[in-house]
Image (cartoon, rainbow, N blue to C red):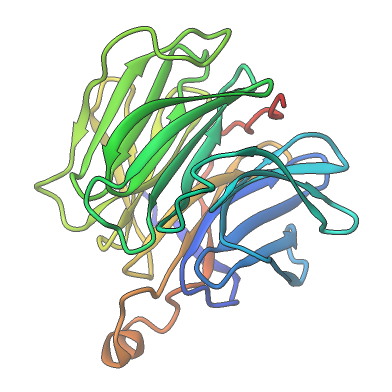
Length: 292
């Protein structure tokens, strides 16, 4: 198997780079430096990285339309005006709990939004996963420490999610028209024997789940039946989340972080926090617009 080229897409070093999403209409990649309260954007393939200051912690973004975005923030879902950057609260989520913030999130094929929350210091069991669709919010799962790997099968009949503290990705059957679970969650993959832990995931057009392995310096591809298809080494120890990019969603961008690294570890991991392009042909797909 030929070697896969991995190159630096953006050398802006994020303390906690997360939540990448490619907006096909604008040709831009958006991602976050969560704890530094930054939103980053880049016109692909080689535009400059623009860094926007945010008034609060945010971690994930969904496209509403060409003029508006929906941000998962520490107080709930807020609408961002693309032209001005102005934020307007749409639906509060744990807004009365200053100890938690948003984390991983993704849009279901029907337009629903699954959003994870967690303790700001990763307190055990402090997080949850919520469902939002057309103005309604429901809590789906609780007792989660670090919610990650939220993604969906292409037909919307399966949702995936995990807890990085437990290092197990679970799957649950869903109603493809609403994105709501229709059964009990079961184990999809158990990565407790692998170096590092699960982080963000996306599923491609074939239903393959691509997971960034935090602490394992790798991007793993899992088949729909839970088999490890391949592992792509990455030049940073803490990759955090992948996203399909390009006009045909044919390549993968991966964010990373230097959170938790001391001075010696950072010197040994000089590109920690950068965002990378994995030059492997994939049958990717884009998240749909969120329906608010």
